[in-house]
Amino acid sequence: MSVDSGGADILEPVPAAAPETQRQTPGGLLRHGREQRGLTVQQIADELHLDVRLVQAIEADNFLSLGAPVYAKGHLRKYASVLGLAPHQVIALYETLSDVPAAPSVVPVMTSQPPPRRISLRIPALIVAGLLVSGLLLWLAAWLLDRISSASAQAEQPASQQAIVAAPPMGESAVAPAETGAATVQPAAASTPAADPVADVTVQLHFSESSWVEIYDAANRRLIYDIGQPGQTRTVAGVAPLRVTLGVASAVAVDVNQQSIPVPRRSGRDAARFTIWPDGSVR
Image (cartoon, rainbow, N blue to C red; front, side, top):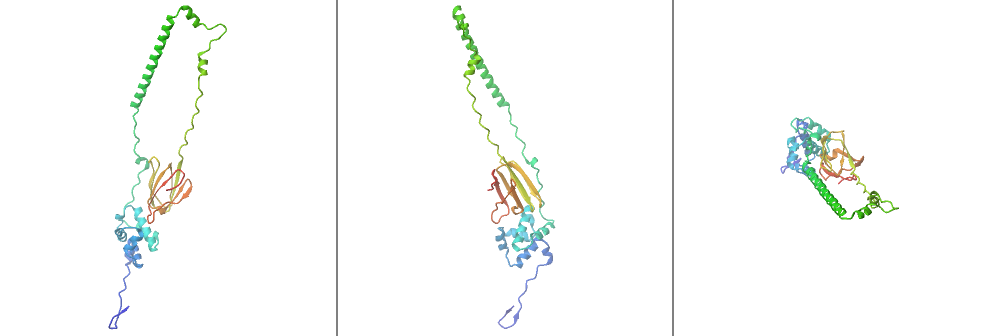
């Protein structure tokens, strides 16, 4: 109450409370809570790290401009926490609305993978066959030349010398070609052990709220592409490093090889992207 110069009392107008019907929607409930605390839209936008137009769209229940339902619910949950309201109450009001985006249909993993590329082996097979035939012809030509040279040299020698060369000396046994060849065989080199295969990494996702999740392995194969539901646990395994994307990181607990890990998150952002390495570390 204030007093003018004439001494008459002037009553200041009291702001009217928001109609009850306006507080039956998530946007109306959040706007009423903001006004009760004397906060501006700009202050809320700074606290949530959002544009002012997005805060205005939330308070106007214009959720079609916020994208997928998982992102709209994330903004509502954070807005309610800033005002000290119960997030589940705001989410329950959101679930009663009809003009909200529909949840995206999940594409099955098996149908989303591109078909394997066919590799033609005809040309490599022809090249290998050509090389083998060429090598065989060269070996046959060399063998024939050697036989012809040996036959010519033997024909030029006298018969007596051919007999002496053909017969081994008395009292001595001829050495078998197989034994002579065996003496020159070198021991085989020890084979080197094969490298150990890369170990798979097992990841378990425990959902307390709905959240979008994508995981790709080292070969860029998609292991999961889905929306996890509250109370659900999903398990995937693949060759590290695994690339993980979470729409609402605060709603997902992550275990790597049965060991709980902290989910790395940026300040003021509920979405998270990180990599799981073969040793189970997360960066």
